[in-house]
Length: 622
Image 1 (tube, one colour):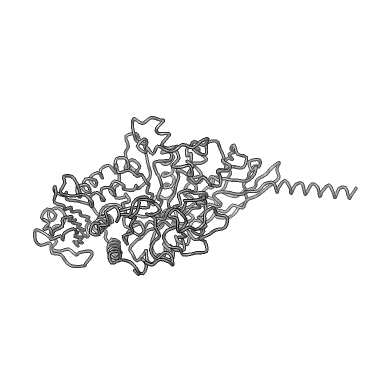
Image 2 (cartoon, one colour):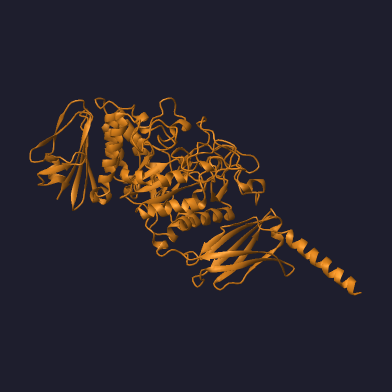
C-alpha cells in the first residue's frame, strides 16, 4: 500500500509539473515600468501559448489589477494595472493561476524615475538637429554586421541593402558632431527591422521594444543618450504609429480580427492627406487614406482598436523614460487615425509638459500643415497637442527662391518672402522644424543644381529664420545624388565612415576644396547660432524683395542684439538702402559684425554693399 501511495504521489507531481510546463510567457510588454508616473494606468501585453486559460493576480502595495482582457487569440492577455502615487519602486510577482494553482509567474519591476524626469525640457529653438540614417553613417562595430538568425545580412553593393552603420559609429563620432555645432541628434528608427530585404531605413518595425541588433542593443541606445547628455546635447527618437513590418512577431498570430486595417486583404492608401481636413470629403475617401497600407510589407495598424491604441501610447512613454529622450519625430503623421493621434499627443505631453514632438506632414500647402499644430483653431474643431510640424512649405519655397530667375515676375526670392507671410496660419511658427533637405528627398546641393553660392545663401537663411533647424548628414560637405532620386543613392555612406573610403569627412582627407569650405562654413554658422538669443527667441521682421531686384532682407532681434541677413542673387555688387532698416529695426547703431569673417561693417551711411551672388550676415549689438 505504501508503495502504491508513493507511486501515486509521484504521478500526480509529474502531472502537475507537466501542466505547469505547458504554460510559459514568451513576451510581456513593457517588461518593466516606473513608479510615480503622472498617468497611474498601465497596459501590459502578455503573450504565451494558451495564456488566456490562466487568471492573473497581483499583490503589491499601490498596484492593483483593474481588469483583464481576453481576445480572439488564446495566446494573449491584456492586463490593465493601476500604479497609484503610493507605489514604491521594487519588484513583485504577477501570478498566472489555474484552478487556484500558480502555473507561471513573472517578476515585474517598478523602477525609480530619474529626478526631474517629468519636467524634462525637449529640444527647442536654440537647437540644431543633425539627422542621421544610422546604417549609412559610420560602421563603428563590424561584429554586428552579420547577426545570426536575422533575415538580411550585409550587402554594401546594394543601395537598398544593409551597409553596417551602427550606434557605436555614432557614439564614436560625437566629438565631430558637437564640434560642428549640432546640439541634437535625430536618428532614423533604430528599432528592430527583421525583414528579408530593404529595411535598412528602419521604418518596417518588427519589435517595438527592441533595438535592431545590427545597430546595437537597447543598452547601446541608452549609452548614446547618456553620452549626448554629458555634452549638453539631445536625442530625438523617430517613431511610427501608422504601420509595422510584415515580419513583426505578432503577424503570425494576430490578437484580434481588427488588429490591422484591411486585415483580410491589404489595400494601398490613396495618400489623400487632405481628407483629414476637407469639409467635403467622403467617408470612403477618408477610410481609404487612413486605413490603406503604404506597401504590402508595411501592414497598417488599426489605432481605433483600443488595445492597439494603448499599446502604442505606452510604448512611446516607455522609450522616453527608458532612454531619457528629448523629443519625438513622428513619421507619416496624417496617416493613422486622426483622433488617436490627438490622444497620443495629449497623453505624451501630459506626462512630459516640457517635451517636444514634430510631425511629418509632407505637404507644401501651409494650410494643411498648420492643421496639426497645438493650439491651432480648426474649422472642424479638431484638437492637436503636438507642438511642432515640419515646414515642408518653406523648404519648397527656399529651393525655388534659390533656383528661379528673379527677373521674372513673382519668381525667386519673392517665393521665400511670400511663404513666410503665411505664418499667420500657424499657432506658433517658432516651433516649426525647418530644413534644406532630409532622408526622403534629393540632397539640397542636388536640388539647387550644385550652385555653391546658393548653397551658402540657403544655409544662412536656415540658420537665421524662425523655427528649429534640421540638417541631414552630409549636407555640410555637399553630398549629392547626381544619378537619380533613389533613396538608396540619397542615403549614401558618409565619407570616412568605413575603412575602405578614400575620402574622410572627419579628417578632411580626400574632400574637395568646396567640400572643405562648405564644412567650415557650416561649422562657423552653427556655432555662432548657439549663442544668438535674437535667433533663438527674438522677433522677426523682413523687407519684401522689389520686383526683379534680387534682394531680400530679414531681421531677428531682441533687447540684446539685432541679426541682419541680406541676400543678393544678382551677379553684381549691390548697394542696399538701409534707411528703412534704421527706422524700424537697427536704430542708431553705427556698425555691425560680419558673423562669418568677424570684420566690422559700418552702418553710419545710407547703404551697405553686398557682393554679387552672396549675402551679408551681421550681428548688431544694442
